[in-house]
Amino acid sequence: MDKSFWKCGSLKLELAQYREVVVFAQFGSNFDDATQYLLNHGVKLTKVFKQPQYSPIPIEKKIVVIYATIKGYLYQIPISNIDQYEHELLKSIVYFLLLYKKKTSLSILTIN
Image 1: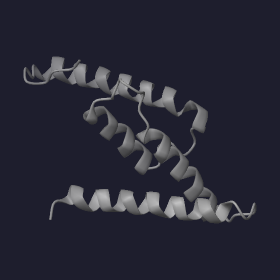
Image 2: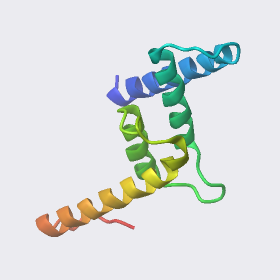
Image 3: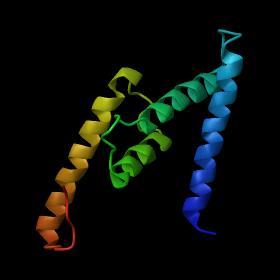
């Protein structure tokens, strides 16, 4: 099977675990570090999947942001700053792709 299939399964599992913990979190307030991390990670992952209405984000850009979230790069970022982080991350990646394109004279790479 394709490796991306297993990544999707892992992502679905993470979101399912998050939803399950949210239900139990309503009844208590003291959580261990692992539970706190799962709650924080789930909130950020859910926020990353949201898109503005009537202006969908291209899939290649969403993949970059989802990858950064899964790998834990957003762990230190407050939830209120995730949109700004997304914008800055994509801006820096476009910049580096333009540099790469210029350096290698790669004509098939197009960036909008």
